[in-house]
Structure formats: structure tokens, C-alpha cells
Image (cartoon, rainbow, N blue to C red; front, top):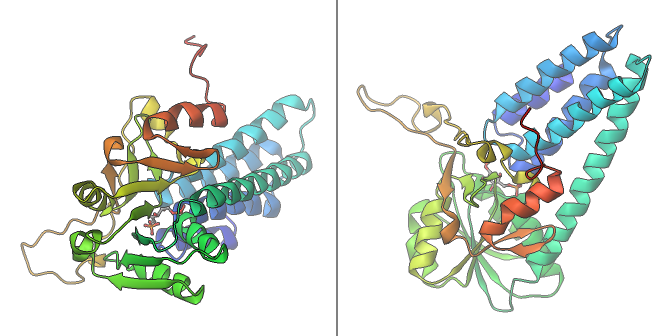
Length: 315
Ligand code: RUB
């Protein structure tokens, strides 16, 4: 595995690269780099190397369907390319991966832009917006609304134990947005004055449930108690196809040391990275095709991803 690819995997594991979109982008870049630097003499060897990289990337953060879906696109194309050529070569494979990588990145940027535009329209003048963790989808939406001249305030939470909330607060403050960071335990207190909650998404399940940074479900329940609209910003690529096949999406458990380096004996530590918010607490998903009800996410995502539901072969 090339050193640059190894570094990307380490940065994803250690959260230097964080957030589903950034992770997915870094993963497809790593796949492309590995192909580009490959010294494999034949296609079979090159594909085997790529398989190792793909598995290592997927294991680096197990709750990331956007990464999985985009990598699946790349490797599927690589295989198709081999099948279509009577004399496949490593050179042809490299060119095909380069082309598909560029197409995927362009599509991701376009989808992100559209989602940002839909989301920005939802921020009203004078609004109090609440968010959690760091989601590039949410920060882009808020920055766009600010650029559009909308005046609003943002409250966000530290997000223990890795403090991604500080990244959000710093980024928004730099953009000139009025932002207040608070401790995670203040969710109920702050919700009393909120108008809208916008969070990101790591995965959306077949029944429209949201998997996002731990604490998101608490925020959604508190929002419901105060009748505050709760939206998740999720491109359709975040759909977990595994859940349609009857599997539960994995919830990543991180090192207990992130919570307490040296806990006293007999103290057990639980450090889940994400939690599940039931579809019924979600007012809507902000996507690249518009703001859709949580129960429609699956149908629209399956269409977009080309995931064949009706007419599927059972052979
Ligand atoms: C980040 C997180 C974000 C989503 C969406 O968790 O929960 O809300 O990944 O991010 P972590 P984006 O810091 O553990 O990766 O909108 O950028 O895809």
C-alpha cells in the first residue's frame, strides 16, 4: 500500500479527516492514488491491491455508507472495464479509475451545491439555529444563508469526547456568523429558544432513521418536546443499502481512552461514535433533490443510486 494511502487511512481513523463527506472524498482519492502509484505488472495483481485498500478504508470508519457507496462505484467500474476489454492492461485500468474518480468528485460537488442551496432557503431572518458536532453539509448551508444576507444566530455543542463542536464554532465565527458554543448537557436549555435544528448524517436507513454523531437522538427528542423542526442534511449517497438487505448499520465504538485515559479500576467506559434517531422525529431530510420526508429517502435514494428493487434477480 502506498505511504500516502496509508496516511489517509490513519487520518480517517484518528478523526483528522472527519465527517461523512470528507471521509468519502478522502477514500475515493486514496483509491485513485493507489491505482496511480501501482507498480503491478498485471491487472489481476492491481485489482487485488485495490481490494486491500478498499477493505482497509471501509474498516477505518464502519458507519460510513457514503464512503462505501462511492468506493463501490469505483471498484464496480474497474471490474466492468476489465470485462469489456478483450486485452485489459494496467494502463487502461488506471485511465478508467482516473476518469470515474473525476466523475464521482464532480457529481459529489454538484450534489453538495444543490443541497446547500435548498438548505440555505430554510434559514429565516432572525432565526435561532441549533446544530451538533461538525457537519460540512450544515456549515456550508449556514455560510450560504449568511452570504445571502440572512441574519441568524447559531448555538452548537462541544461534542465530547473529540470536541468537533469547536471546529464548527470556529468555522462559523470566521465566516462572520453569530455562534455560541455550549456544553452537550445544555441541549434542553438551548432548545427553549430555538427555531430550527440542522444536523448532518452519516447514514440513513431503509426506514428513514438517521445515524449521526452520538447525542443527535437526544437533540431530536428535545426538539420534539419543544415543537422545534428537526432536519438532517443528507445527500442520497448516505443511504445504507445494507439496511435494505435486512442488516443493521454498524455503530462504531471508539477507544474508551478518548473518554478517560486512566479510569479507576472497575469503571467501564462506553464510547459510541453515533446514535440512531427514529424517522418519526425527523421533520425532513435536506438532500440534493430537495427537502424530502424521512420515509421517502429510501425510494429516492434507491432510484439515484441505481439500486434495483423491483425486478431484482433472485437467481
Ligand atoms: C461527524 C458527524 C457529522 C456527519 C455528517 O462525526 O456526525 O454530522 O458525518 O458530516 P465524526 P458531513 O466527527 O465522528 O466523523 O455533513 O460533513 O458529511
